[in-house]
Image (cartoon, rainbow, N blue to C red; front, side, top):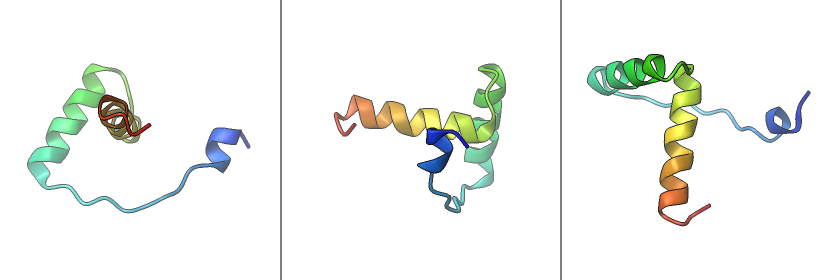
Length: 52
């Protein structure tokens, strides 16, 4: 198992249908999975706000 997989934590995320549709489309446009897209969005927000 890779180090990245060993250091991940799972959690449930509830999104309204409109937001989920937008994330699904964005992920498809960038050839990412929905999970990958959400991880990317969070990482970008953390970097932008100097939290990571």
